[in-house]
Image 1 (spheres, helix red, strand yellow):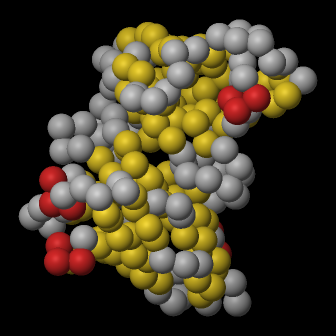
Image 2: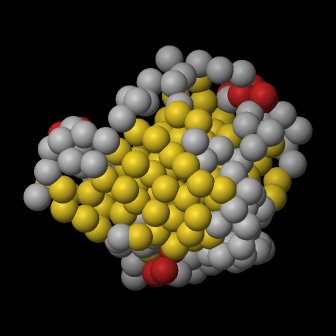
Length: 107
Length: 119
């Protein structure tokens, strides 16, 4: 199984800050990497697929990059609605696996 | 409205089985797969497997093979997950999620169904 490791597991940031979350795969997954946002008590919501393709309706302050084993989710100018938990997920091979999540909290 | 609506929470005893439903609306059910993902408290999301909405073919995570069964009723646009021989570690929120056949990306999720296993 492909192991997905996210860092940090949590971070505190202020509104307007730039935030970077990293995700590392235990083997190369090309660009088969997706990012989800999950707010408390809700289902995850797809933000980015294929490592860098922003989903329709997702604000442009979100961006994704990377390929192979190392990936990044960046949020520029953090907004109040961005405080949530973010998960990466590899869609390269079965079983599909997720990172442990990064909780973005208000400083 | 494009959505997945799941059945309500369940409380089960160890050793019992649970069935969770996931009703799709607003899109052609047979043109997508339905995946099942669970989330235990404080744990990462865990993929259980998927069912082809069109032909009913299934693929299960090896961890759950033999204990989980996915079915679907195309006339009702509904997918089902049966999990048997429940143990306390199966206590979690179970989500269904829509996925395309061309990639395993979850672009639409149900609201989740809490399954509690307790004696």
